[in-house]
Image (cartoon, rainbow, N blue to C red; front, side, top):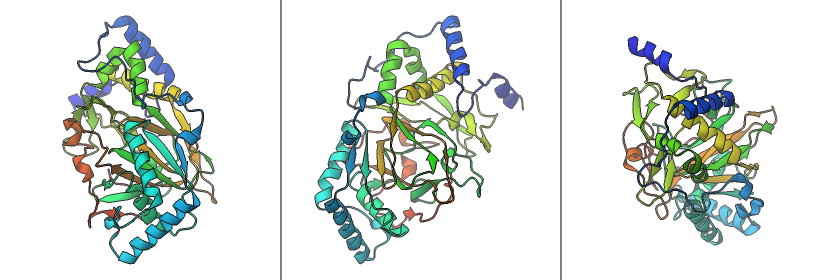
Length: 387
């Protein structure tokens, strides 16, 4: 009881959707009252001069990162879909061999290279979602995506590799914003690549936003290197009812290839709606509270809004790009509904730091990455993902 009471007293005042005035007051107080570190952590560079270090205003023409499917591409997908169905295999056997694309395969491999060694994101436009029934949409989406990342990751303990992102809050108890129409603040998912297929967009709102962690790092490194130091230190993360109740992990990493990585989601430290953060978990520090808010507000300032259309497939490098979503409104005729995959590319995939590879919480071991598996579950109807 004493521990829980101490946590309630000392925990910084934080909400899932941060308050800019609270952040500004904390920032000014720390700048005036604390002697903040002026050097970056050992091994971290002064700046990242890479294609993935961009700000939203850099992108004037979306044709640079949007690939429009041609008539020939769609015929290629149709033929690959028919071929896979003729094999009568379980869905876990969808791969490049069983979903053979001819003309499109080279383009998709170049897109994966851009994802890992370039800007870190792209959009495929014009996937014919209305042409296919749900099962065929799932097969074709998974087949196309196997050329971006051949390994599929589990998104829950029941081995679901395709899940639905839609508002289920009216019919289910929901502890994560993914299954509501609420705003999602900047965060990462699990795994190397996050892919979303828009079966339908919202009647209003729901803009998809992405930001470069390398660009945000460059801003912090120049003006506030202490924030970089804080982000690379250990943070007490909620383990959402598992044993242990919390675990310690950094938010920012530099791997052996000198790749900058970010891995976090804000509700680890704030909770969300019906799932508050337990008071028995050690609170984050004032420095961590400022760094967490700074990530959000700088990402908002420097992000790119994506024109996410019905039939778009969005792919982002989940290690170098963090993403958010505006709140939205559905109508009876138009309800936002996305399919999601977590992927890894065996050829281009980045080296994963040991602290992300294994242990409690979200780790790469928990993804059970495989190309072909009888265990993989392909969910055809929306359900709330188990943490």
